[in-house]
Amino acid sequence: PFPAPPTPPPPISIAATWTYPYIYGFWERANTAIPAVEVTYEATNRSGIDEGARPMFVVVPALRNVRMAQTHPMVSSPNTLTLTLTSNFALLASDATTITIAGMAGATAQSPLPLGGADAASFGSSGEWCNCSGNATLTMTLTSDIAALTD
Image (cartoon, rainbow, N blue to C red; front, top):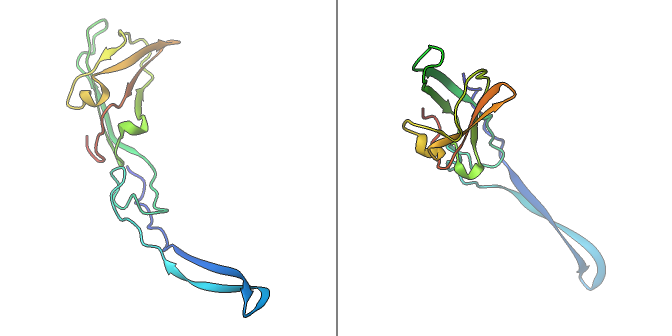
């Protein structure tokens, strides 16, 4: 499950004090308080999060509905793995987002590994396969954005 919804941030206000050195013909310091005003903000979507542009509004990034399936369970058979996941934030290529699948001990493949499916193009249609120290990993780097809360 996703973490609890974020708590709205408190109102933000700004106040100032104006200090000036000369007053009524005398050289001395004087201060004038400038009353506080509440800050207005841009309540727009940012990274797929409503009000994500609002200052001090933060969420914990999370994945849900992470599912993986294969086409063949037999040893030495060609196999296709299908990964489905949902995030509570937009996956943005400009953030250098990567997804890594690890723990596939004993699996082998050539790198780069071709990707298929509806969002394959979002990852440049291939991922980097590594048979590293007996722990096979597949790393996919996002090349185009994927909206928040989509499979």
